[in-house]
Length: 223
Image (cartoon, rainbow, N blue to C red; front, top):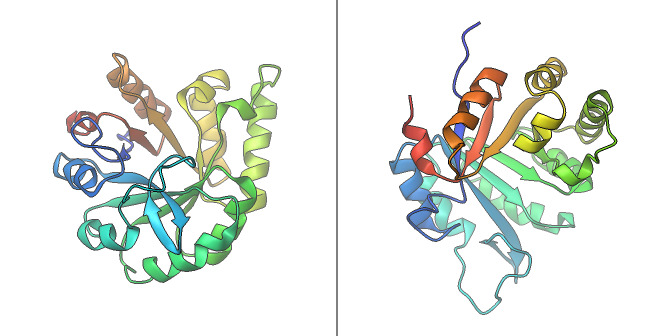
């Protein structure tokens, strides 16, 4: 079986060259060869703004999703992490995304109950469930961890499971990916900007991880 490079998605854009979650960072990431970009959104005073932290500075003028998408909607994958605890954000988000029916979107969240609401609101858009490492304590076996991922993913109806390198290493690497694939899920992981990033990318190729966010957009130029 031919092993292919995972889709490489610039985490919050080209953050090596520009501030994260800005239009400049997103455009630069695509210009430098990224397959997609990842952004974080909040609903604030009736508008969907692009910023990572829940404790953001309310006095700052953050980019608005409605202003950013017209510039990048046809450049590649746009992965949108929804930073919310309630589904209030979904209707205004639907109003915006409906203007770009041909765009390759993915909607993600780490809030497990919200994931089901996202999939119900956006049945035609792939939804990713982010499962952080703290959900998998040391006592868990690989089999139990896999059951947890499969159970939660199935119950909320998502298409992709997002797990980091630590979780992959802890619970079986390629074997875990294969089990999740067999159940119909695509797998997303993350590569931090460190000395091992090229080695990590090779691991993901070997394990057949489908896509990953990258902190250093230069990885997208590797053959």
